[in-house]
Picture 1 (cartoon, helix red, strand yellow):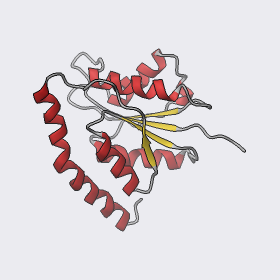
Picture 2 (cartoon, one colour; picture 1 turned 60 degrees about the vertical axis):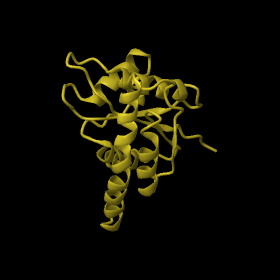
Picture 3 (cartoon, helix red, strand yellow; picture 1 turned 135 degrees about the vertical axis):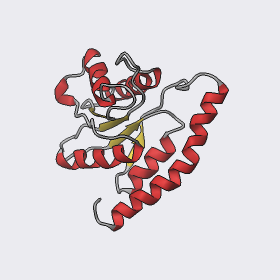
Length: 172
């Protein structure tokens, strides 16, 4: 019996004006790497995220962090096109299919973002599970934490409706 490596999709976060990763981006990559390198065989990483307010693409910054931590480029497949969570889900599903991925799929993001991300992947037919999320919140201060949590409330049903529409159109 062949064991397939898990794929870890690392959802993007902001890149700073100087091109360095934000704290949230670093935490997501660290959480993914911590879980992925304990697996046998070790995980394949799919960082996803295009160019936001500042370049380079979020996926490129994450790939560089992974490589700086010793992950070989052959175990990293970037999606530099996605501009939001829904785009990331759709792009990563295409990448997984192109790779003929047969292992489990894990999602690396912050705790507040996991319900929407997991729901979208599952509605698209991918039995995704979470990577243990980063220990601390991405943003400091209670108001910032609540902002990010509350932002998810309208986003989840909106994105869920869009992903179901994609399934109806048979694009998934």
